[in-house]
Image (cartoon, rainbow, N blue to C red; front, side, top):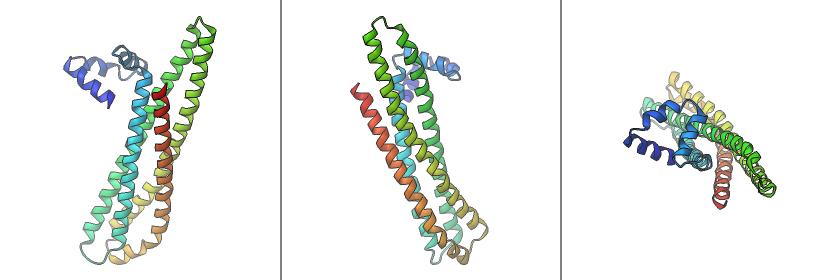
Length: 221
């Protein structure tokens, strides 16, 4: 991604230590990036793309985890410990993907706040009232598009929690009940888990759609 490529270049020029020092302060970080030719607007688009990709990866991982869960419930003999290990690994991967999604959404919120704050402040710098009004309208339009985007992302983010909770319950239960009877008792949970996954997928798809629309709108400007 854009910022990772930039960081790699900075290392080559021995500037990376300086960038590392300012990472703790968002304003200093964005100021440094802007001087290097990467304005907040471009960083925002880049981070929206990263968040979208993280959601796509998480969606696929949750779907894979569900299939693992189903395979455990269809247990017909073999090593129970192996089935447990598979489900535990699937849960761990899903949890890691979910954490990445949360981090990416936070990064979008951070750069959006910085961008809009700067944009608002710079409206007072116009000497032309018509240009100021035009910029103000564009700001409000971008804010509206962003509000739709972040709302969709947040809804999808929240849908991950009940799915992860359900998977965690299954993993924890099997950890202490490694027998065929225990696995059979989990069959009743399958419908609920499937329902939670379906809801998550719908919200993920809606969020990804909003991200693509936002990216497209920003590219046209």
